[in-house]
Amino acid sequence: MEKMVESGNGNGNGNGNGNGELPYHRNNHHALDVTTDAPSIMASKCFDDDGRPKRTGTVWTASAHIITAVIGSGVLSLAWSTAQLGWIAGPTVLFLFSFVTYYTSTLLAACYRAGDPDTGKRNYTYMDAVKSTLGGYQEKICGWVQYVNLFGVAIGYTIASSISMMAVKRANCFHRSGGTDPCHMNANPYMIAFGVIQILFSQIPDFDQLWWLSFVAAVMSFTYSTIGLGLGIGKVIENKEIKGSLTGIGIDVVSPTDKVWRSFQALGGIAFAYSFSNILIEIQDTIKAPPSEAKTMKKASLVSIFVTTIFYMLCGCFGYAAFGDQSPGNLLTGFGFYNPYWLLDIANVAIVVHLVGAYQVYCQPIYAFVEKLAASRFPDSYFVTKEFRIPLPGGSSYNLNLFRLVWRTIFVIITTLISMLLPFFNDIVGLLGSLGFWPLTVYYPVEMYIAQMKIPKWSTRWVSLQILSMACLIISIAAAAGSIAGMIVDLKSVKPFHMNY
Image (cartoon, rainbow, N blue to C red; front, side):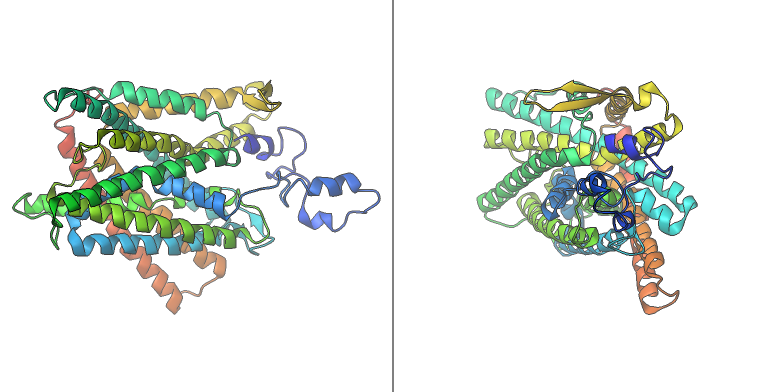
């Protein structure tokens, strides 16, 4: 990130103090002389207490970021997940995941500042929060889990976007041929096209400059979710019945072993659909104060999770009601719906636009980490720290950094290549959800909150939090096992770089 490079190491521009903070501090403002230090007073109106430019985020911008991250490709697999679990367990699991995600997000939001929630030292990233409360060893473990998960999300979104792009072309092909042409096509060109788009958008320096993309992406997510919901309702009306059963797909359709694995994989898919804790601190770092960032973030989490849960319940349940045991893995591209084809085209275009924004929201923490590390290791490097101001129409300008240009381009190319190697939408979604849910959504928020609030060991609250953590660990292990089992099956029928749809 540009701000990370400029102020993350304290050495690149000669103005830092060596620990990532510029010499403008809230405590120092009280000591300024109003007659001799007027320039510093003016500067404090432009900078926050850590010396960085004033943050401008609100409940609504934070909610937009969260909705962009949460209502993603995961919503499209919820009908399939509900079909594996049935009418009782499906909605129940959806609600429980929403409750756990909201509760742990409030715990994590309380850890944005170390100590005092209003004046404590800011933690700019998830890893910073872990380091300040749990120590450096836990920070390293968290870093590996977080960035591997974010890297995997980038791969999952590349796969999902290519499927939606192909669905647009295939729907039109079906319409022209009257359903006589199978309209098979290769996924690689579409993944490459998405990668090219991401190379361009990846040059947006940081979260603060992504707010407009998040709003567009959030609108797109509501668009295709609403279309999927509407088509599901229409299908139920057309069928004149509600399909499905209380226990989900029966053992007369799949073997008992497959039923277990698919149920576990469904848990991973639902966990993925709610996942945003791995970027919560980074989103919170865009919020202005007062009121405290924690209060604003808790409100944003409540708003966004409430909205997404309603959408998830409706999309998952009506999708299952429409198709029953035959619910497709991807509601809008599994061709459970064929008409109106133009409405499906709109939905799939909206998915692609949304995933362009969601990819950026998830990848910004990775970009920031690598660029901050490079700036601290090579503070005098022209390639790493030099920025070139490029004039843009309208009197604005863009700061081009060569390291950012090269490194982010390489990152996008790598995620695109891996997507072409492993084009398994449902398996990837389930595996990512299972791997990231317990450590990032539950374990670290719980442990950091216990340390931050100094909750006594073996107290009622401590025991309750540990029980929650252990229960979620068991769910994550089961979900990972189910997704790996599904991936092993898929690997037998798919050749790398030869994914046809």
